[in-house]
Length: 110
Image 1 (cartoon, rainbow, N blue to C red):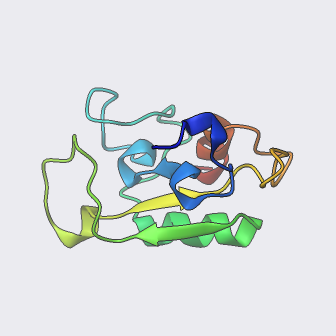
Image 2: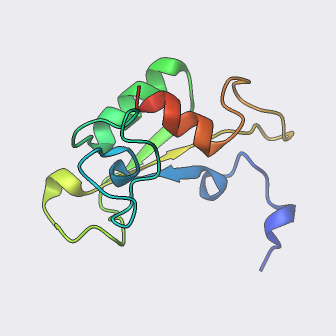
């Protein structure tokens, strides 16, 4: 098995994951919200997150059948996660305004 440091940042399994619960203002921090309520939105879907990230110019792909582990509701509306590439193969940032997953989440929610 390859060491994580030896894999390229451009490999899809190295992309960061954003679940809709991270940006949902209806969730508490214990339920999975990761950003302030003032920046969060009401019931975002993985498709909406994908659309926003694509519009900004990020390389994204949607995994429709994935579920956030803290999500108790199994409805299709709450399914999905978005994988986002932050670093290129050489390790440089894809977009300098998004150096980390935290800055990406704050911007996507606004």
